[in-house]
Length: 224
Image (spheres, rainbow, N blue to C red):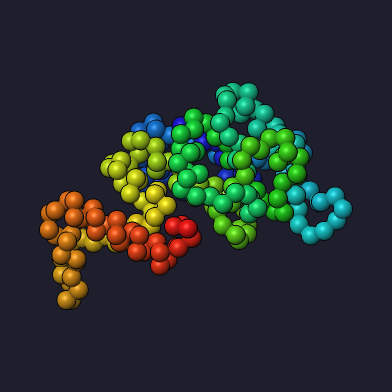
């Protein structure tokens, strides 16, 4: 899988992909992540990527030309399943969306910034718009990192135990059950006996019951 991220602040993303699971996925050749500096595609002398909004108002707007130049260059080199724009008014990101995107071959993620992008970018280039929550960030870089992480960890071979991702919260529209580790008792606080029993069928039944219970209490809307 290949992910191309377009941003005017590439250094914000450098560290994120250089550690932990994401780095191991790249080292294994399971994913390629390329961060493109939008300023390199500007034709302005000062490498400008934004300008004032027509009609006035506060905030700057990302210009269409450098975005067009970058996306057109990438599309000339390969086909893309989706060109995604990170924006607060996009589709709410979910595990289902992550599952679907993890099956992609190539995707582009455009990071919004300032007041957003020229609307013609959304009309002409974007195939999918994603929001990671009903709030506003300074830019789309952190959101792009979140989406990338959620997608990459689902790629077969990325996690050492591939069943781990299948038991995450939201995979079955349920929250994950409680988990415990050693010691079995600490300061009088004990791990549930069922988890120490060795009876796999009963343990799985307990976990499902706990998932349902936790979901009903914390996120009842998922069950509805």
